[in-house]
Image (cartoon, rainbow, N blue to C red; front, side, top):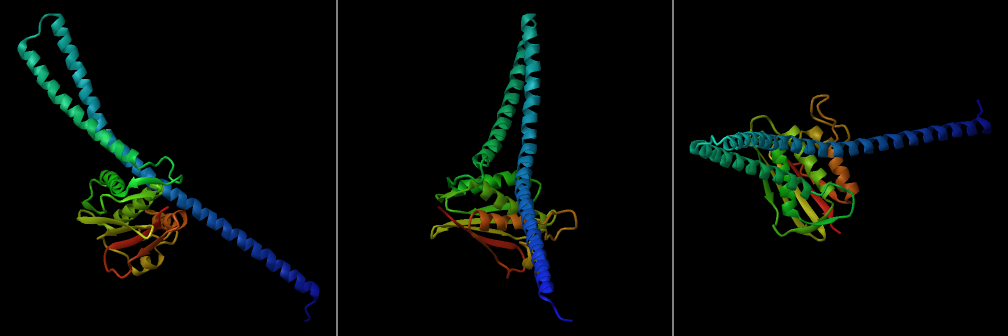
Length: 281
């Protein structure tokens, strides 16, 4: 059978049409993955906000209870004074209770303020806006302080090896998302229950780059995880327990948002180790 020019043209047109459909399908998949990665970044911050909000409920609830009790006792004392029926013993008892309740109020108010300030200092309002000049050691200290709250029931020690005078310009919101996903990844996939673990963060500035090191002493990566850890939807968790986007988001933030690089130590038999390089303006 001899192929005519018409047949050849029709075949080329059909192939071109199929190629265009494939290009559009791949573009759709890429945009869908970017959307899911953005949702993962928001979810990480949302979980952090939720944890801090939950932690604030305890001291603020105690403050409300203490203030309500103090209000009731003060009304009773005022009534006794009005009736000229207040004894010295009743007054002393009231003053002692007042001192105890006031101390408890101050302690819990300070605790609440400390939590709020730690969260506020992270400057998450405009994570993709202009960079901010920060003391990086204090910045990481604030982030870790919030995660100590979120995972307070876990036996994890957080260590910083960062120069106290390390002053750099960073995008705070993006760095919080990176560190958040790394810590969440350690807790979800690297750590067991009721065991002691350590997370260590290091940082230095060299050749106009911020070098951030992250390490945990958990169970580490198996061969499959080493190969696919940055792949979207890859997870070592049972089906339904994890979306498999945490490390994908970290890689996207470092390489795409910050034009940096992330390198994993794949020679380790246990634990997880990552070196992140971020150009500093």
